[in-house]
Amino acid sequence: MPRLSAFRHTPGTLSPSGVLDVGLKCAHSCKFCYYSFMAGRADGHQHEALRHAVFRSTEDCLAIIDRLAANGLTNFDITGGEPTMHPGLPAMVRRARERGLTVRVITLGQFLMRPPLPPEEESAPTLLDALIEAGVTDFLFSLHSSTEAGFHETTRGSLAKVAAAMDTLDARGFQYSANTVVHAGNVAELPDIARLSASHGVYHHNFIVFNAYYRWDSPAHIAGMQAAYADVRGPLTRAVGILEAAGVAVTVRYLPLCAAPELTRNIVGVVGVHHDPHEWMNRAGNPDRDPDYCAEVLSVPVDGPREIYALRPGARRLDFGAAGAVDAVAVRGDDFKVFPALCGGCAAMPYCDGLDPKYLLLHGGTGLAPFARMEGRPPLTAARLAYLPAFVLKSEPFEDVRAAVAEGFRRTCGRS
Image (cartoon, rainbow, N blue to C red; front, side):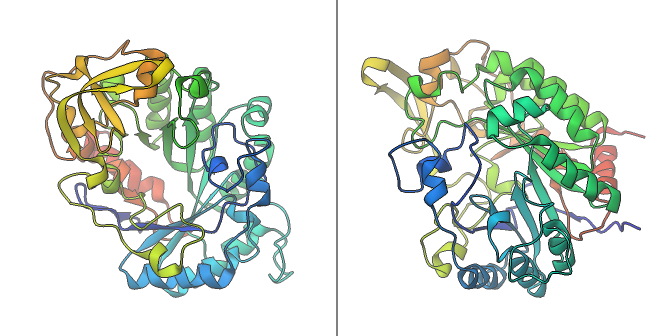
């Protein structure tokens, strides 16, 4: 019988979570992937570099886990690449549990129903069984489409394989979380993705609005990938409503607050992301650095974003050559995100990421409007601080974490 022992994170405090990057090796071809531009090969197909990437050694991964625990983190994600391709994954989960850490595996779910890779014991018929036996706490499944054809088009993977793993976990009373990257190709089906997620054992669903990082460096590159926020708002709002009605907590990452003001309680971007209990507090995206460097906890102020995301007021023009120019009244960090003239005087600016300048060059500011008032305690809005379902962390494999989320909804919304 599932047990209720979910850890409730205190809103407004920094995340206790970390990450272990096992390396960039991956067999998938997610069309929006920016890791595909990090693996050291610029030639050939976008994803070719991931095929040639290598994993960290299991020994290095175990050393990072030891250091995460020593540095005071209480839980962490294992990511890649595709971590279920790493033969040492069950050993990593066992080490995490030995160190008193909870551990979540981020995966596209394509290999969980296969036999585990050597040197794991043959007694576990599938990798999923081996990970459960090792004590895995949680999974974060990637649900980027609600149909087999759409999933294959987006990832070159199979939705049926993800569903098989989810069905197996559902039958065992093991609850988990889900991710959806919101891009131009799946905006219309966001409500259907929400229905799919709600029909399974998902307790928290993330919608991650596509970010134009790394080689997505121009309006031409993101055209056809970056959806206009005016087009995203309706389907995303309906999707959030479907999930919350089913008792699932929802977080929306990297959407300007005024792009969907009705979702203010769900939205958290770079400004407040380190106050999200699932966010990584150590260095990520460093598959070639030593364990001490990777496990070091970042310095983040409790009352604001990291310095690299700091708000810098002042008019400036960003020139993108033939693509055009963007006039801003303020920027975040080193022009990481910008606030165009329409944001001048917006009361939400201390809580909002702003916009990617490439987005503005492609779509302009249609559908955006400043807030006359926004309450909160920087870096989080009052609505986000009050949204208790988002601050539930799973702490045991077979706990009924949805019950804790339901309690959060009762306290937030007065639900019966």
